[in-house]
Length: 272
Ligand SMILES: NC(=O)c1ccc[n+]([C@@H]2O[C@H](COP(=O)([O-])OP(=O)(O)OC[C@H]3O[C@@H](n4cnc5c(N)ncnc54)[C@H](O)[C@@H]3O)[C@@H](O)[C@H]2O)c1
Image (tube, rainbow, N blue to C red; front, top):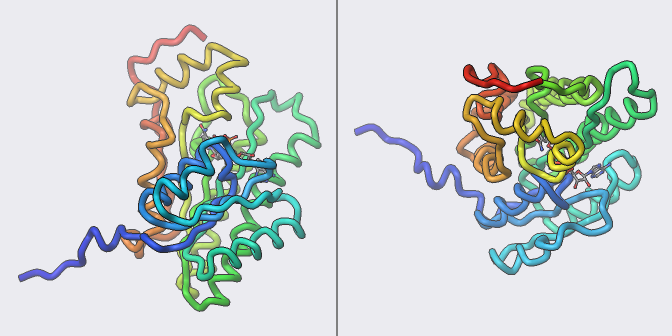
């Protein structure tokens, strides 16, 4: 008789401890919520003075330890101190998800040095050093661990009617960073993967739709699955990549785009 692992146990991360950057709202908060639902403890780091109104009720709702630490991922000293605080709260850390990010929809010729630098600083350098801080901790613990970087569909393709060259460049860097770290850290039992969301309904994309109503149709009609993604659509992939169910998965990228990263819907007719 064939003998297999228990799949439920492979997905079980109850009692494990994670850090989520950008966890105050949006995709980051959804991942904090998903981890709490499955019984994990989380420290969320974010630049905002306080997280969204629902944050504080999550710990009580699921009987786990969910804490918030204010941190700017571009501030070398502040980020180091915030990670030390998180390690102190959590004890042994099992994984990191980097969601802190900013976007800019602007023509290439009009993008300034300051805007371009800020995007690379938050999205690339902030992600780079968040990963470095947790990798050092895994090595100190002698445990290995899982790092999940939030890249973007813009690391795969150019979005219809979008001008996001600085953002796309940053997310291409994040996806490649995930592969480089996966190879460099594999010997320490540290896995590194990325998730590339497509159009997901968050505060970030709501702002884009508010500024430019044509984006409502683009976000809902261009993905082959014919709808905008929700934050729920990302939860399973995050839990999978942090769990032992993905123990042979490293240097991977899960594109969660409704199919848009390979093709616009065949029957998509938009009046551009
Ligand atoms: N929403 C989408 O459609 C979509 C698609 C692809 C990729 N993404 C990526 O997913 C991630 C989360 O996006 P979102 O839609 O939830 O956006 P969001 O704006 O709702 O959340 C981003 C979070 O990052 C935090 N942040 C920004 N700068 C920071 C800094 N310097 N230090 C610490 N925290 C900082 C913000 O305060 C915010 O809480 C981002 O990296 C984004 O690029 C989003």
